Structures are given as structure tokens and as C-alpha cells.
Figure 1: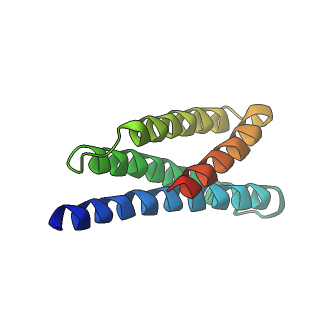
Figure 2: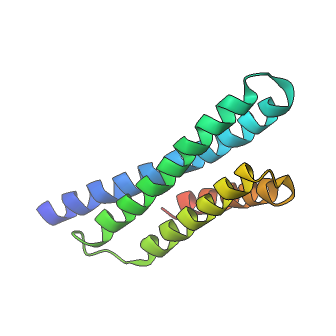
Length: 120
């Protein structure tokens, strides 16, 4: 009984981490729109990028915690690590001002994050 409760909490932490990541990616799309229309858009988008990257790292941590002590599948660690790689590429592309790849990659990341959230 205690094992089920512990596994359920870790599952919940993993689901929360994925939801947070999905939300931060969505907010990045909103702040990208503000980039075009408001003077504070660039600052908001820059801060949002750091928050999104932190959310991706939290997703990796949650996946490891759900796997190692809980005895779950290691598959979410691969997904989370893949998201962290995509987030790293996204940050580099944003800093390099390559919108032709940066924007579609952001859309892809949002879609994949929604799929990961739906799986949980």
C-alpha cells in the first residue's frame, strides 16, 4: 500500500513537471507575439526562455525520480532528455536570431509537450 502511494506521488510530480513545461512553452509563444508589438516583449521573451529551460530541467529531474526509486520505466528519461536537447537548440537559435528555425521548433516543442502531457 505504501509503495502505491509513493509511486502515485512521483507520477504526480512528473505530470506536474510536464504541465509546467507545456505552459512555459505556450507562454513563450505569447511573448513572441509581444516581441512584435510591445517594447517590453524582448525582455519578457528572454526571461521566459530561462524559465522554459528550467522547466525542461525539472522535467528531467522528475523523470529520474519517477524511475529510480519508484521502479518505473526509464522511457520518460529519454523523452525528458530529448526535450532538454530541443530546449538547448531553441535557446541557441534564439540568441543567434534564426527565426526560420526557431519558430517552427517552438511549435514542434509545444506539440510534443502536449503529447507527453496527454500520455500521462
